[in-house]
Image (cartoon, rainbow, N blue to C red):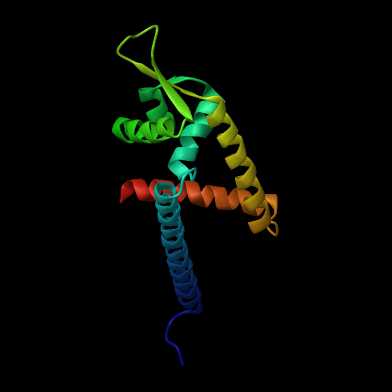
Length: 160
């Protein structure tokens, strides 16, 4: 016979269930990170492959137009050095071009080329298709909850 009050047992069971759920979420986050690493690996080995970071640069330039490197770094949540490396790779593939700013000669503007815009549109089409297929059984509320969890995990990663 248990000496714990019933409320304490229920609370303990709920806490244990939450710990287990958080452990499953942690394992899923590690799996997502591993998948991202595999994608980055393909992007370095296969011509035309784009990492999520490269695709994010293309998306922001498609949405915002030409941007100074510093602003692009801010919008991509990347360091200046990191975005410069991304831009250099995209420039080598012909997806972006760099030009001196007419307003500030010290600043470099980055803009999409026609090829870059076409690549961005193709990537967005593919992403939408794959997401729809993979998540077809999830309703809008579930998708919104998943998006909130991913944003929260981004904050967790920033704290590690």
